[in-house]
Length: 265
Image (cartoon, rainbow, N blue to C red; front, side, top):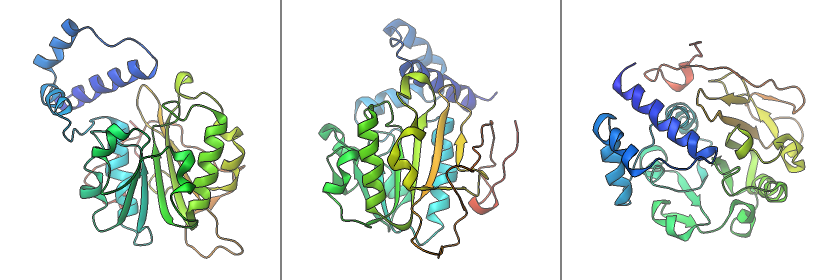
């Protein structure tokens, strides 16, 4: 294991401890990573200064190196909403969505500085108050289930309003931690999610992909089906027949998005 991979595993372990509600390490125990972990000291300083601080975890790698490029390569996805802002998302507009009509939404006003130029201060379950029906081509909602989106009623409103704000054939990417503390209810039991069609992501060959992380971060892919005969070339499956991909996988980051293939570890 090289130093970068070792640092990644250490970061994922800290994310997991936070996800399951363990107390943070003492200041004394934090001295070790400052001296031994690649990039740790720089991240601490940048975060304290409120600067862009990339998050070196496997789920972020999958999001940034596989999912984002897939949508970048498709000119149909021009108007994009990214849900949630922090130091590790502040570069997304510049690096991944330059030239797109890119928006962010986040309820915490203190995090506005990490959002896009076009930013709304509001929770996702109020998105329809700020945007017209059929406005977005793509909504990416990553890491808010169990981190603010905590009740079934909230999730019902959020999915229903995402559906209304997406245009026909628009996509919803939903990332969540598949551990009990951060999955307060069964997603499949939320009525409004049944309005979507599960989209089989070509890179994964499945509508659901679980990353190789201790907090089991999972990406689900949905499409708002157009009325009548399907007019798009998207690959889709009905809600009751799609099979999730529940395996660890690795990808060659030097391979183009359309050529990426799953290889078992």
